Amino acid sequence: MSYKIGRKRQLNKLTFAIQIEAKEIVTNAQAGHFVMIRTHQQGERIPLTIANAQGDYIEIIVKVVGETTHKLSQLEVGDHVYEIIGPLGHPFEMPKIQSLCVIAGGVGCAIGYPIAKEYMRKGVHVTFIAGFKDESEVFYEHEFHQVSDECIITVEQPSEKYMQGNVIDALKHVLKTQKIDAIFAIGSLPMMKAVTNIGEQHHILTVVSLNPIMVDGIGMCGGCRVNVGGKAHFACVEGPEFDGRLVDFDNLIARNQAYDCRWKYHAK
Image 1 (tube, rainbow, N blue to C red):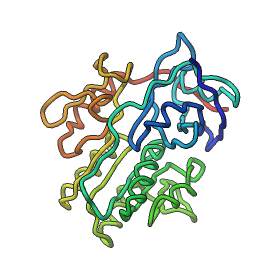
Image 2: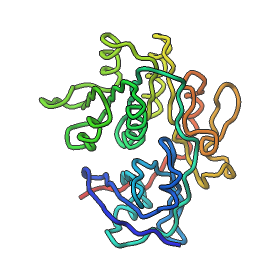
Image 3: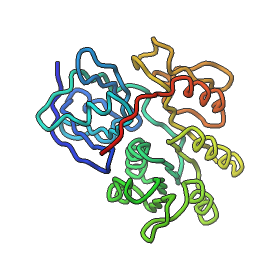
């Protein structure tokens, strides 16, 4: 079975939003779920978050960082993806809260978006902090504002439009002015570790979405093993969200570095 691309948008130099027809996945998709995608029969499987699921289509956000994401970005409307497996993982769940701060960096914003959307729908006050390197990388700005009561976009380079700094700077600012019941963080491992530390200092539950290497997405390969609470867990079937206070970030950072990809796509 193949899956047809219905819409494609280029969000920035290396990032694309792609809608793929997958009605049976839409029926069961919830915030926090992901899919495993293979572009062709001999291709590798890669995990991508379901950023949106509506009608007959799921939307994924693809940043070109390797050979498979490059091939996926080259597909056009009407082309087909060879295989999609999902929805996978556990849907995101929080205890009853009144306020949630969603913190996302770069392409991780594609994961933060459906979380914010779901909790705003539930009547929770949502603050969305999205971090990018510079203005040219910002995407989904309109969407972020739609799914939050307050949206802060940070960029590391000087900017007249956005807050200069990073998501940690924005979080510290928010905590000075708001009462936050819980934090959801997705981005680089050092960023999630820093957010978790700040959450602990303020006695705030911090949930992180882990992104270790996944090969099959069903817990068989062991590539996505993470140490949580002193025990081994598989992010693809037991996560990808975990209590950040229990995650051994140093171990996970070391494991991810062992799989460091040497294939790089250089945009023209």
